[in-house]
Image (cartoon, rainbow, N blue to C red; front, side, top):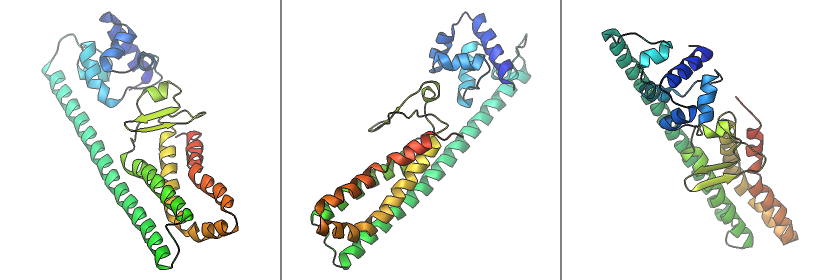
Length: 251
């Protein structure tokens, strides 16, 4: 299916029903810029929008897919529509199953990371390192913070951003309780997978490496407590590195 042909067909059907791009966009819960891109042949709509789009335009799903209308509805068209709807439903279910399976695997990996981090801290305790002093306080501040970010990016993060992120330069990411604002960064579906993978790698690296650095931080505190500050800041703010690197990559 050609983008230009599909876009011209949508435009023709929309105008036949005396609808503006904004009216069609509102019915499909997308932006009018998205409709404009479809009609100009710059992009295809998401597969889940095809059936509601056909309904709004007053045509069959088969007519929408073939970019032409039939003079009379036929049994063949009705059967084809049903088969297309079933295939879309199967594909959507398959995608959901894949997403569910990936989330289970990521959850398992994150649990292993947390267990490994806990074992490292337990070994430090067995070796007699103080974990309750001022340096230990820093340890208990950094690790929970990293676990929080890791929990989100390994398990709960969305695999795909809303359409508006691809149409506008958005530097703020919202997902319920989680908010991330990054000046100079525009989140979109091209760089989002790179950002997510970068944050997973960062959280795994900190959870595995930071406890190993604890004896070193104790030594720094013995020399001068202020020497700890650059180390702590470097660890905490290093999370911005994978975000900025990932933001400048695209699929």
